[in-house]
View (cartoon, protein in one colour):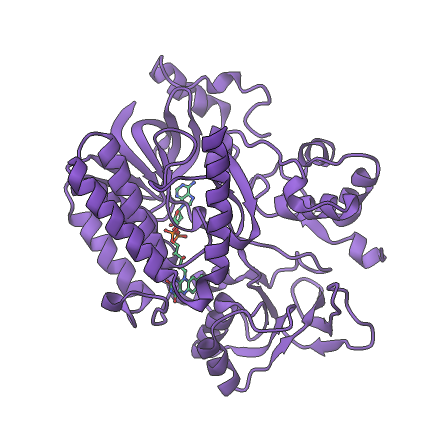
Length: 109
Length: 368
Ligand SMILES: Cc1cc2nc3c(=O)[nH]c(=O)nc-3n(C[C@H](O)[C@H](O)[C@H](O)COP(=O)(O)OP(=O)(O)OC[C@H]3O[C@@H](n4cnc5c(N)ncnc54)[C@H](O)[C@@H]3O)c2cc1C
């Protein structure tokens, strides 16, 4: 892979390059969730809308499998970063609302 | 918390039609869109539409959008919530989380229709993060909604209908289009759109792709090259184009995060645009009471999105006990027939094959 190619930005929100993605895949991260947790690709404001398929494609290429077999990362609401306080407000405003405050990974995962 | 009988996420053609149909049975509908006004993709379509049933053939997309939006506005049962983004659906509690101009709120709908449309695919090449690299949707929004030219000289990547139509609209706006490149050996879009582009003297280069975009602070040029059967560039075939815009029209993927996150079963069917929700003949997903319509279910056209919208709205209203059984059966059949007719042409072969894969999946579920 040329230097140029290595520097291609895959995740624009978190500035993660193709070189970084390929490195963690070579090191054994072969699911979207693993790549995400190690590199933060897909954790920014767009929550992976742009890079998800690109990362899945890279893993698929590396493993020689179709994209459909690459385990997809789970989605959790909310889809974009929101303030904890705002979420808590709905909760307080109505007792039978969602248990959004128990989202184990917070609002920006 | 606000309660509503049917909440619809997305006020494109699919969402509006679902709203109109459900509302016609006295169902109280909340129609949500992150945009200020309803219309979805159609508000950007200044060209005359194809793939359309007789009544609106040849109508410009924006006119269809205005017409639908007006009907929705006049309907007393439809409450339009604009500038509002839906952020998630908590299936267990039945709460839809939305961000309104007045902050984050929860809505409790009895039925939910997801008609969120699609998002644009991105391509990997050096320089793809330079200002001046746009998705075709962004270029259309700039030009046709805000009246702003994206630049002076454009390289278009992708010769599907979107790439061809946006190239034409760029020329109409006084922007030069240097070339349209296409990785496949043949042009993706309709011949009629391609001929228009060729008549303007714009080359459509098949088996070509972008090697890189370059520039200091923004795009100052792009290099294209020929590619082989494995989509690898062939050294020595490079051409340097002095462009300031690289426009990507390399496909759409269904915006199905909601369904995914809420636990709906998904299936990977490339012919339909990638990961799509599994849904039945009522447009209902594997989550009871959650329906889909339009591009979120399969990347198709506004005509099919509308028919699917009507069908989803009808089924949602019926499940709330608002539609007499006979009427439900006959109307459902009519919409199904309309969809079949819209998908009858040779250009729909891919979709039809994708839908049969989807039906097989449903079959498997039923026999489990
Ligand atoms: C250049 C171009 C040319 C086309 N030409 C034709 C043609 O000639 N004939 C034809 O039939 N079709 C054509 N189409 C296709 C047609 O525009 C689409 O198939 C159709 O608009 C899909 O309708 P939809 O309602 O599913 O989605 P959309 O029109 O995309 O509407 C989805 C709506 O959902 C909203 N939304 C998404 N997520 C959220 C959220 N979380 N919260 C709130 N709101 C949300 C979006 O803001 C949007 O308004 C063309 C498309 C393009 C891009």
